[in-house]
Length: 579
Image (cartoon, rainbow, N blue to C red; front, side, top):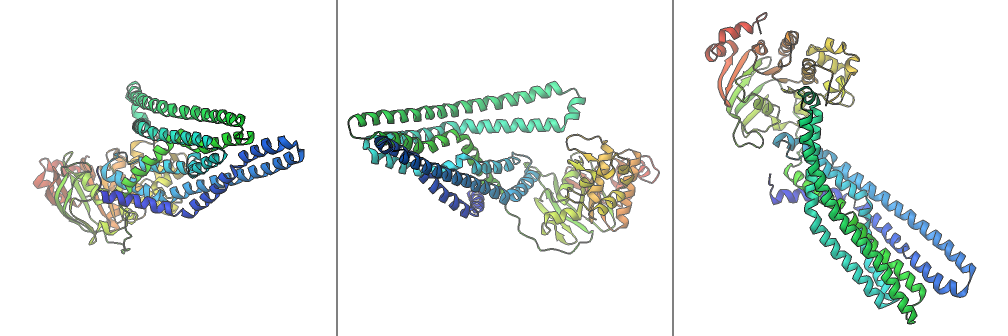
């Protein structure tokens, strides 16, 4: 999806603001870089003194004094370089910590509104920038500005040596620019192919039971391997290109140092240069070109971070920061839907059109209709997962966007069609992944969902570990745990989307008991259903077809007017009837 230039600029400014918070640390790293590069002159100056002073004077005392001084200076350089690395590592950590919550929220919001669309890469993009900050490649960015000063120092030894060093530096810069242009597209293709292969592997891992049960392992492997081979092919192409530049620059730098020695030796023979200056010039050239060579070798890291910066700017620009909302008092369970129109993310056609109804506290509303009628779209709109394209959804008079998302999540319990448990204990899953869920509220929610006894029969009760990818629990058990999660925290409205799709007769009875309990507490319950048993406790009925409201009113009245087999359904929805 394309975003405007203003949104992109806003995203970039948000990233720059996070980077500016580390301005003091950048200055400290720059100060350390100054002294590190100054101390880099230790080697050339030491060689200059050895060849031009010590060998000529044959003074052991001078050699010992110079060697002790050099040992101290190199020790200080190592200490300062280590401190610079620690500072830059903390820059990366602070940058990531500063944006972790913001990027996480943006990824969740965009994925919920528009589907995946590679939004999950937002966290990986942030990590790629953090890795650049902590890598030696970023330290090289502080060293490259000193390259001209080192080349100027070589000019002081002799202009010929200076021009040779200048030629080498310019050549490496040109190679760097060519590297940038040639490897950018292959790197991007390799990253995209690798991400697609990882996504497919995660999907297959999540659905491993189905893959195994349906004999899909060979077909799944071949499909995954095809993506994997494409990713490997792209990575090899990218690595070959990058490697060719890395090895070429390394060989060229070694050649330049040898050429520096050769030209220096000629100048010594001509009496225009001392042997010490010849050796010092070669060492100084190596130091001048080393950060450029390192930047070329680490270019994929720069490129990933640059792409990550661009992707994050687009993500943050498109998903703006949510402004704080004024805290509202706990609402009554009064749900008022007014002319609601919903367009699913990425679609052009509305799944709900101009739907209106009102449910008073203590009532249960059944929403029925054929597949594709818009029942799940209505559930997603009322839970604020999807935003209305038109109309309003009001909770006790206030529109849903007047509540903070986390607050709204506590006020509206939701049981989706497909219940997903997360890695952790059953108590943590019921407690909505809170680090320390309230045990009393967890047990209370399970009791209201009539799942308490079932959970106690598990090996470790509420402390039984479950996994997102696979679980030893049955579909019915998972659904009842999901119902307990929907009821955790005492919500005022509970939305159940096909709640008895995996339940046996005992589970259906437990569900109806839970619905009766919620009604007695003055809560509003919405049940999206296909099976008649699911609407047994409903007072009202909403019939949807092709996204439009067909009928709404008291359950039996609506059934009599709108449904052909109304009498049979009415019998099945009475206590003791056949479901």
